[in-house]
Length: 351
Image (cartoon, rainbow, N blue to C red; front, side):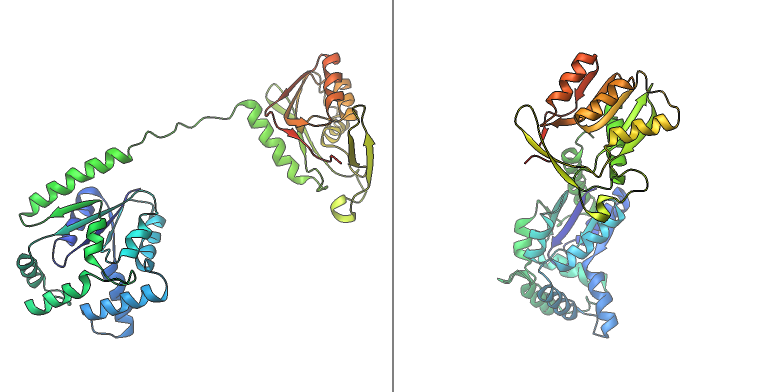
């Protein structure tokens, strides 16, 4: 998505560039002028440049210097297509739009006499004015020290690309087309190809989804047991059937001192995800012989013994448990492959 802002002097050809982008390039048009006229008509105000200037300045002062163009940018974003915003007139609008991705500001100017003739021929509701009024309007909008007010001079200075429109429309279109090709060259960054997750990533993500059913906030972990890339059974941390859950009654905690001197605190109310998965398989007569188990961290000693005895041959953990050395040693003796997807060591339940 490319968003182009148009700024420039009165009658310089801003609308002509917009028309080109819409008709030749398929851009969607968003107009500050029309936005202000909607408000003016609802308020019953005269449809002239004085009203538009007053309403525009009032909106910017009440909200922010970039309020109007920010609102139009939001509309463009919702549509999700290339857009052109006409016309950017305040420095604050430019500074805000520059913070948004894929934005470019065009500025256009032309000889003043030529521009007045164009405005006179255009004959819109705001264009029935004398040359003297035309000049006065432009001088009033051309410079200001207040970022909330119109400052065409500063906006033109800040433009990414500037165009002169003293010749034919074909010459102006040639300038615009050349710039558009340059912009498209900048924007045509090769898309990052989609990479499918590996089977281990796929099943680990499922295990993490299963974990959302866990009923103990000290360790909402889940487990998936798979064979031949088919899920056999799942399990998550929770109390035995019919007993109250930690989320309802609180925790029953007990400390354990490990051989390496590490002290951990465990909740004795819950059954671990691996244990629940193996129990579910036993209840349903599902053999886990030769299966792979996916879980969040290194299984505890009890879980490791159950994994070994039920015939699971491979265990994949998202990360290491800081007190899992005993289980790792048991898996090595039993010939069970233990793999970790990340090097991170989980300090869960450490005291």
